[in-house]
Length: 174
Length: 204
Image (cartoon, rainbow over all chains, first blue to last red):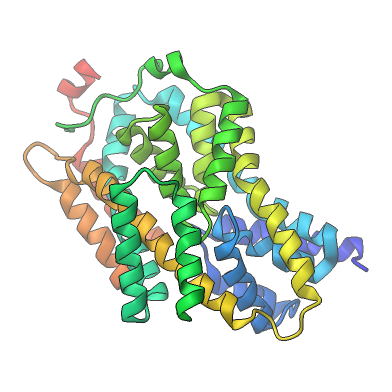
């Protein structure tokens, strides 16, 4: 059973992982801590949890809930999830409220103009990385292209399109 | 400075059709359900623009801010958009909304799988790969509008925005450099290029 010490350690580890995942997630760091340093899960559990997180509704990193549950049961899942998402969500909300209050200040305009192109570049880089990890065959490229056209041409709910693509993937053994 | 961007919201003309806390929570549950396979930011954009709660420029602003706070982007973005549209309660509602469906699903699936030897069956692996292709496509639909907003930022006549966009892409996507130093340099360049002058003080 999970001891309070384990739960606290788990919580603090996930707080740290959440707060160091700048501009996305530091998967390498997560693997290093959970599999290597702490030895809480094996590499296969790590990989499976990540893949499952991709298929869950919501943010990709719901894998943290999976890890917490595997490591220490229900309380472990709660500790990992709250630790990972809580502090960063509070920070983000605080940043947004500050921004709203001061957005008419001349330096805020400067800040915004400096940040917007950076945000665009980050997004393009994310597309490249995601493309490299998910497109490994012509079939996958075709599936991505077809879903893109469907999303652009229709007002179809994107969840339907994603689930449809998952079904197609399973049928053709992607 | 910005030729094509509207000025930032003074004191929220959007307040007229600002969503309630409950509407925000419901919208983000929808975003989470749509975000199977990832792409929460893209689904957030679709949901917010579709309801008329945010414009493309406002979304680009929130998206960029969400990149700058540490942690998972999709949840940060929900917290930010929620805070912007509904204050603290809006932030809480949006964050819980975007997390809840996945928490329930992930807990259920994990409990099922823990009893299963050998991990994920191949057919589920294939389905995951298919979903990932669609996730990429969802992200691609968002790229154009977001990049255009930053791209059009100019300092006088200099296309600083376009240059920073390209350099950021190369540094993070191609060279895979650390985000923090890249951010310090390229945002630093932008801050110097767009620093307030006497004229902008006048009309800001």
